[in-house]
Amino acid sequence: MSLASKLKEQRDAIVAEVESTLAAEEVTAEALDAASAKQDEISALDERIATAEKVEARTAAIAEARKESGVPTFGNGVVTREAMTYDRDGKNSFVRDLIGAQLRNDSSSWERLNRHSREVAIETRDVSRTDSTSAGDLVPPLYLINDYAEFARAARVTADLVTGMAMPAGTDSINVPQITTGTLAAFQSADNAATTTRDLVTNTVVAPVRTISGYENVSIQLVEQSPLAGGLDKLVFGDLMSDYALQLNTAVLGTGDGTSGTLKGLVTLGADTTNGIPTTWTETTPSAVNGAIAIAKAISKVVTNRYKAAEAIIMSPSTWYWFASQVDGSNRPLVVPTAGGSNAFNANGIITNAGASAGLVGTIQGVPVYVDATMTKTYGAGTNQSPILVGKFSDSYLFESGVKTRVLPDVLSSNLTVRFQVYGYSALAHRFNKSVSTISGTGAIAPTGY
Image 1 (cartoon, one colour):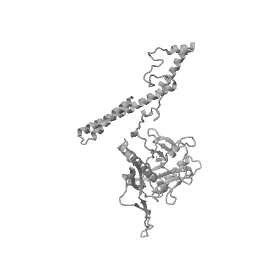
Image 2: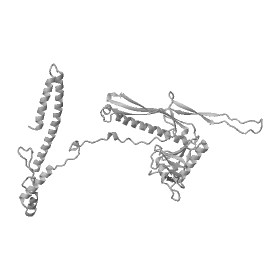
Image 3: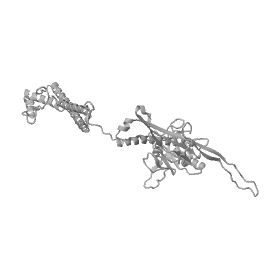
Image 4: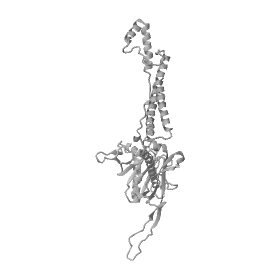
């Protein structure tokens, strides 16, 4: 009888004993404790049975392989411990047989060498880490679940350049009065002569309150069985909130017109040909020199229309690093690094944060430059432009409610599913139409290779 069979008989006897105990009319507390202890014995026996069955299966496989290879076995064919042809304590010499076979073509030497080859082929049979078919099940994978790689998203840059405000409660739009025509004062031509007057003309900037939301359905099994525990909550909600911030920043910077649930983005504001101050950069083969000229024109438009200094320039990272790679007619870089705080000589722009992926990276014409990866690259007539914004961005007010989180266990309760949800409210009010200039045109085509 095999070891596995003996262990099974022993386990079956204990199981029968436990069943007999629990079948009694009155089961005492001591009997229950004894039955519980027996259950531990049964579990231990199950593990030993599983191990014994694997060993027996492996032994049978070796015996079958020996049979197919013509290697004899002892007794009833069950492999126990057969001495190898060239065993350490055996009478045969591998070297002596090599000499006998090669120099004298001795048949006995050849027979022992051939037998040794078959033994080595069996005894050194390879296993791999392939699951289910080899020994891979003995090498479990290790997951660094606490160090998971989060989904890569662009940073929130532009939304932090405008003026942040708390979202008021109890409203679906925020209205900002705007003076479109101001009063007038003038020199009096003479004593008692008529003075000058002009009536105020006002308008209202309407900023509708918009909703941003997102959710993820998660099985209850994942929530309860994941070793991340509270970390799973952080993973799901953290990812949802990251995308919430991305969507909001994209809307603030972007091309929305303020209708159909969108915000009126800064690109749209700065490109308004009726009330705004757009700048056109026309060039078949874009050059950094003409790009710098377009930026200077946009700065001038902000200053001469808003009568305030331009606060920042916003462009995509690819546009900025394209600028940083360009040279003038004398092969001098137009945007150069600054070291130790010293000002670079003869430079149109300065790099102050080399290799930055977001935020402040340097200056052009002395105006801070911010890179924002959410800047569109599909703008304009050819849907291939990446605009550049120049403006006094604090003139725009961004109202935010903050991100709210919910866990809804009843939405898909029939499927044992819970819903993780985030949502919030925002509104974007542009107090001045001529605070931002959008630089667009054929010269603003998104640079390739950057």
